[in-house]
Image 1 (cartoon, rainbow, N blue to C red):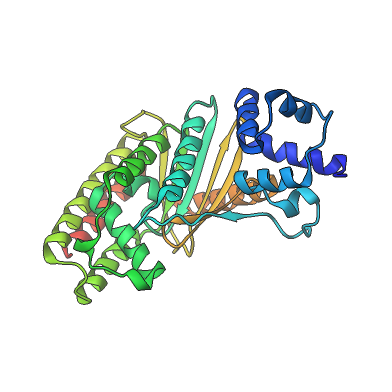
Image 2 (image 1 turned 60 degrees about the vertical axis):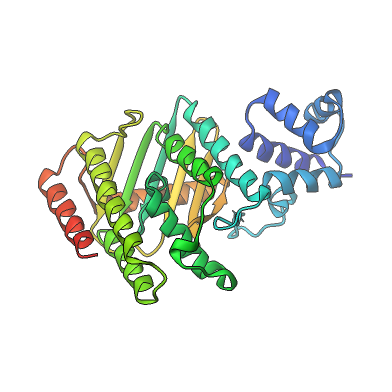
Length: 320
């Protein structure tokens, strides 16, 4: 029989992901194919979850079996990675995108929500609002991720369904109540260098480079407006933009709400490994805020540094 410690650990992990009880009950009915009353008996502890049920719930809700069985090492923390195919998405890929958007939508309804990002590339929740930049990032991702299906930029066709999902992602992230971005001072240069590289391989035509260049200028206008006003134009929610005084070697993010503490490490340009472990969250949050301490704030203040930064970025784009 599965002991009480495992049952309690499972319930703690489930409630981190689905804090609202009515939603939780419906989700477990759907996952386990049992009646509501049977679910209520399990939630009240009158009937234990079977190991088969625990395994199925863990798979569907991305819960680490090692964590709930208590067999992970003290220095080992559970992380999960999902790998949707962005270039040629199938139904399960759209399902993963929809789950992420639903998670963001739930955050937007919280009374408290906070996000912190440290990034050496253009943050995903900012570039997804610009079609050519999004298409280039998916093209770049596909080039490295799936060498068997490498196509020229103009041959990559993104469906309306995929574009709509990313647009919704772009809007939902702006509903987070407080946001901190720490970006590498060379992030536009890194992006431009990638475009130039694919130009030399003749995988991007001149007409597409011009579209990317236009979107880069529009993107810079967007984040400069965000920096000047200290908020997102879509929602008015406050955002702090920092320029790192040192080069950033990887990409980190945390999201905190009344009910959830969530950590992400960016992988493969567009994917992330994620964790709901609270100790991992605290370390991630501390890591992000340590970068804030050694970075220059250019939103709603630091006018001289802000003008200099955006002037340099536009100069880099103009040379594309």
